[in-house]
Structures are given as C-alpha cells and as structure tokens.
Image (cartoon, rainbow, N blue to C red):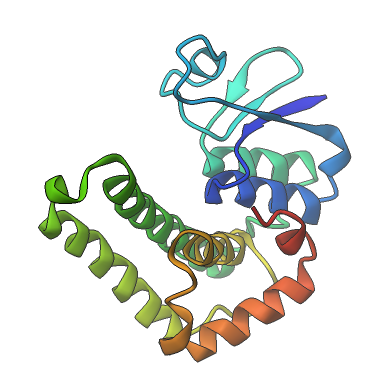
Length: 198
C-alpha cells in the first residue's frame, strides 16, 4: 500500500488525490495526515524539506513533490494518461501544470503573510507582487481556458482555483466567468474534485 502524507487544504495534495482517482489508483493509496509544525512528525524524514505531499512507497522510500508523485502514478497506471507522451500535447500540459502550481504558490504566500504576521507587520509590496502573479495567470486562463481531455495541467488549474475558493472566498469568480464555467465542467468530469474539497 502506498501512503500519501497529506493535508485536506493543500492544493498540491488534492492534485495528487484527483490524479490517483482518475488513474484508478485510489484503492492503492492510504491517506495519512501530516503535522508540518511538529518536529517529531515523520514527514521530515519522508521529505527532508518537511513539505507535503509526500508519497511513501512500499519499500519505505518516498517521492515528493506533487509533480513527481503525479507522474509516478501516471507511470504506475500505464503511462501517457495524464502526462501525454506526444510532445504536441505533453508540453502544453506541463506548461498548464506550471501555471496552476504557480497560482497555488503565490496564493499560499499571500495566505502565510496574512495568517502568520500581525497586520501591522505585513509587507504590502510582497502581497501585491504575489497577487499580481495570480491576477495575470487568471487573466491568461480567462482569455484561453484549458481545452481537450483532462491532463495534469487541467488538474493543477482546478486545484489552484479550489484553493482560491477555500482561502479567499472565491473572489476570483466575479471577473472570470469563462473559468467559472470551465471549473464547473471539470468538476462534472472529475467527481473526485468535489470529493476532495476541504
């Protein structure tokens, strides 16, 4: 049995869980929480960076981060399902994955700044820089929503949007109707999107 060290709110762990479901591997993976603030939590051994997700393999070794884990699972399921082998599809999927993960990266930095620092100590230029990354990425997606069959890029984008819904009350939705529609279609096509909602 594979063990996924995870947290319900993590967009990256959610990405892995959705990928596993689409690949038909959910019954081979046990979900185990991780306390990143606890110095005794074994996540720091399973991933020296002390970050989630980490996938503990049957031989006790582990893989991290979500990009590596998702590609491993794709290979386990026969390959080429979420990571297309044809370069004409593969690189757009990888680019979209980078965009989705980048939205999540920026949104997490905003969240950390807002949650861990007293309001008087928050660094407005840092918040604005990260928000500008999210805004530009959303504008690019709104102008050209993802197309074609679900791949790792689609999953990454959906999880990033889900994180924006979770932590920022879906403020992105009002000005991005095409992406709202896209996410609704994605959710219907991938029922694990709703099943993994935090």
